[in-house]
Length: 467
Image (cartoon, rainbow, N blue to C red; front, side, top):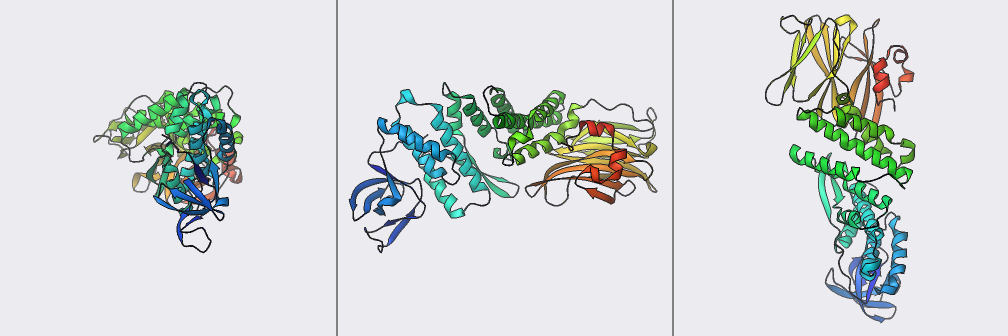
């Protein structure tokens, strides 16, 4: 809730403005003021204003040019709104903009109140939280600005994600936007995007709470129409829906429910997004969706057909486990060639035989945004299973998938899509099947000769690694 502001006020316009003990430059500095701080004016002397800071419960003097008078009558509302509109899209001025937004909400009569002010304040609060969570912003400045906006009822939540602290706006004013009659499609879309951020979900949420949050995110996103939206906002909505449906598909698969519909919706929404409309500023959001949907894409594929001379079966092991066994031929009752159990989701539709029955690959997904490739292959000592992970060096999310096989040289073709230390990286590799040693690697399959000739047709048709 935005705090009610009193009359006879001034707003601080710049950071590090000095509140001094006397109206002169040589007087001791009592405290440094920050943009957006609101002061009560009690007099003027020698170019200084005598003020009282209720937030710090301290009085003093501040230079007149460091502050601007703040009038809160109905007649002043249009001017306050004009300043709010100007500051809304000015990075680094979030605290000042939110302060002007609070003043506008105090001045404007209820009959003239629209969703615009709520939308502007919420977007600045979200941007301030993002600045506090990322690099390139002074820690002292952002901490002070966060304290400034707290007095206006702007609340942040703190989460630990990927070894760092993530600050998130609690979204109260975004929810207010959704209740205001006459809110534009663009304003409603911004509100829903602010309320459905994946990085603002506590990573320690249990499966029941997470499923409930994903269902709420789905309902919010489905309630936004695309009419009159900008191309950027429309593509952002498609990307966000894709990530939400990917999460829902994973949860359904983990509960042993049918995930095909949710996974197909995730693919459809991702393909509906135009990466060029998102630009460089939103590219990371799009790439994150590609990785997440790419990890779950096997959920949309029906079970694989017969595997020739090999038979792959999945049975229930210990509670929560799936055990996979490879046998020599269907219908035989010999002991399995090799067997392994996992708590991950085994995508049986991904099973693909290799090398005239001397190898097989299988996609296994232990986490929502993490999919591995199990490689079954025969050696001198018999059959074994090696696990290829998307990345080994400080990984965050990703997937690795089978892309083809070169029969003459016995090389396995794979593709990796991974986010590592905040950056997305895609690679295409040739591995020796016998020991999975790396032979060649490139950032695009066009640089690898064998990819051009031996890549799997179904992989090329369905993969997201080529998008």
